[in-house]
Image (cartoon, one colour):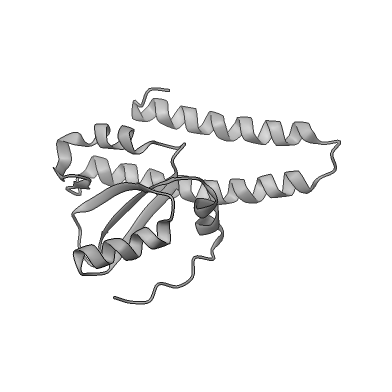
Length: 150
């Protein structure tokens, strides 16, 4: 197994700052199967998975669990389950993972935006509220489009 570079990009830090993450991985160089899971320590979990399956894994996406819970994801793709938390790379699942990757990037940019807002003078608390409300609105619209109960 290869040494994993330190997780130091903005979006990786944003993921690690959350209490739990929903992640999608697959064996390196393979189309599937794809594992959906939940973890509090993403880098340790990736190393553990590599040890369990005996090959490197590719992280497809990881988002804070408030974006979509593991149980919601398992229900959405139950028809494509192979075993436990492993799924066939069905086009619906791949589209969901692409949406996760876009949300992953937004989470990182949101973290940066929140830091900038918090750095403003205390006279600007409404800016923080407006930014958080915009992000929550984006999340609710996506969940409605995906048919997830809001």
